[in-house]
Image (cartoon, helix red, strand yellow):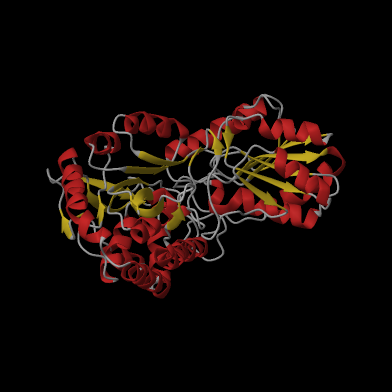
Length: 485
C-alpha cells in the first residue's frame, strides 16, 4: 500500500471533461477535508455552471458513437475496470478512508462492492434483449428493441464515494449512455480516481465526465433543464430528491431516485438472538451508521429485550473509535461537524424524552468529527430519531408486545427503503415480510445490498431500482416497430 501522501498526490484534482483533465473555468478550487483531523487533504477544481455545460456538451457529442459501440466492447471496458479496481484496492481504500473517514478495512469492502457492479454490468451489456411477435390478427409483426436513453446526469452522495457512482456508471456504460457525474463535495477524490481508472480501461473520451463543485444546484439545475440530457439519477436525501424531480419534470427526464431511509429492525420473541445481535450490529454500524440502509429504529419484543439490549450494549461498548487508518479501529469519524452535531441533537432529544443511554451518548473527545457508539433504551415513539435519519452510530431500542404493534410502528414513517426482521417462525417471516412497507427486506440478516439484486425503496424512499437484472432497464428505452407484411 502506498503512503497517505502518495495516494493523495497520485489522485487527479481537476475536472474531467471530454477525456481531458481541465481546471475550473474561473480557476476556483474547493478543499477536501480529512474528517478524522479536520485538516485539508488537497484542493480540487470547483466547477462553475459553464464547466457543467461543457461537460454536458462533451456527453452529447459522444452519445451517438458510444451507443453504436458493440455491447461486447462496452462490457470488456467494464470488466477491465473491475480488474483494475481489484488490483489497486489497497490504494483506493486508503484514499477513500482519508476523504470519508471509515476504517480502511471497510473501505476495502466498499471497493470490492463497487467493483462488483462493473463485473455484473459487464455481463449484462451483452444480454440486452428485444422481441418479435406476430400481431394478434396475423396481418403484421411487432419488433421490440431496447436502446440507450441518451446522455445521463448522475449525482452521488458522500457516504459511499465509490459504490454509489459504480452503481450508476456500470449500467449506463453497459446500456450505451454517456454521462455527467457530480460527486459530493466532501468526497470527490474516489470518483476522480475512478474516472482515471476507467480511461485506462479504455473508456472513450466524453463518455464519462466528472464535475466537482461546491455549488451543486447552480451547476446541475441548468443541465437538468437543458433538454439534451434524457436521464437523471440521484442518490441522497428525500428533500433534495423532491426538488430534482420538480426540475426534471420541465423536460420530462427519466428519473431514478434512491432517497432517504428510516429502516426498522424487528426482533421477535422467537428470534435466534445470536443472529439478531450480529444482524443488528451489521445493519446499524455498517459505514459507522452513515448509510440509508442503516437500522434507524430497533423494535424488540419485551420478552427478549433485556437479553438483547445487554448483548448489543456489550458489542457496541467494545468498538474502538479512531482515525480509519489506525490499526484495530472499528468506527471512524462522521463526515463533518454538521453531521456530528445533528447526531448529538437527536440523542439529546431522545434522552430529554425519557430514553436511557446504556453506552455512549455523547461526542467523542479530541479532534475530528467523532461520536461515541451509543445504545439508547426505552426510546419513545415521539423522539425525533424515530422519524429522522440518524446517520450515525446510535442504536435506539423500543419494546413491543404483539406482531401487529411491531408492524404498525415499523410502517409509521414516510420512508420505505429497507426493513429487517428476525424470527425462526417461517409463517411469521413471510407474513411480516409481506406487510412491511419497504422495497427491500433483510430476513434474519443485517445486510441487503448486492450488485446482483434490485436496490430501491417505496414511498418517499425513491423511484426505480439499481442493480440486479432490472438495473440496466433504467438506462434503456423500449422502441416498438410495427411491420407490415
